[in-house]
Amino acid sequence: MGWKRTGNFVFLFNQSAFNNEWQAGGTSNIAGNAGLNYDFNYKTPEMIWDNKFIAAYGLTQLKGQDAVKSDDRLEFTSLLGKKAKGYWFYSGFLNFRTQMDAGFVKAGNDPVTNEQLFVRNSHFFSPAYLQLGPGMLWKKSDNLKVNIAPATSRLIVVHSHFTEFGSAFGVEQGKSTRFEFGAALNGYYKFNIMENISMENILNLYSNYLDKPQNVDIDYQMNLVMKVNKYISTNLAFQAIYDDNTIGAFQIREVFGLGFNYGF
Image 1 (spheres, helix red, strand yellow):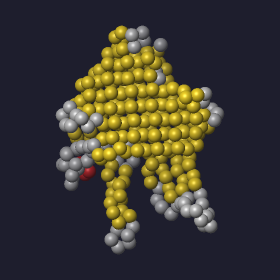
Image 2 (image 1 turned 45 degrees about the vertical axis):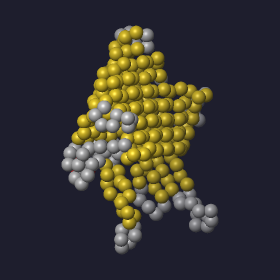
Image 3 (image 1 turned 180 degrees about the vertical axis):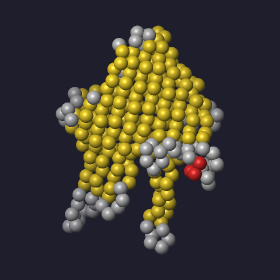
Image 4 (image 1 turned 90 degrees about the vertical axis):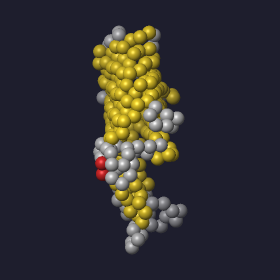
């Protein structure tokens, strides 16, 4: 009972190098990713309050090129539950997520130099997503829970300079916010595959009643940790996002590397 706090900081490192005589092809590169995953939960016989904070940032640099962003996340989730019966709780949840740094997309080539051009399409708090709503929580343990919220409000915030010439992230041209009302399902499952190998799964689904409710937004994250010892591990992070307001296809992110861990 009372407060329970656990956290983990990890730094992932990847590197490939080829000398000038290497004939099979390849480009030397270096990559680094830092991440913080922190939980602070409160529990009494009649109430639970679960909070999770995730921050991650990564850079990749190919030889002869500028460094580019490979990961950028800032997310906070809070889930409050009052005991109903068995593993069920009446619940209220809040989720906020955004990014910390600017993002760029390809915009063709320079007509004179033929160099590839990029334009900025996002930065801190653009976009930002805020969800909140009442529901029902099924929680067997801190490592296995599902929250169902059929009356969830969602606000999408984007700076107006991204919508000056068209819509962005579902926000209409000339506006800076978009309000949605729909249903959300949030699931969490963490388990050990075998000794020193754990898998964390986070699934978020959202359907907007006000616009194309059949197009469900999907955000799935998987974190696989294979411990070598207390401070070193091999880590695999995978994320798949589908949001037709952003792009009508799955966005996939995968990071694999040697990790230096600090648990607290």
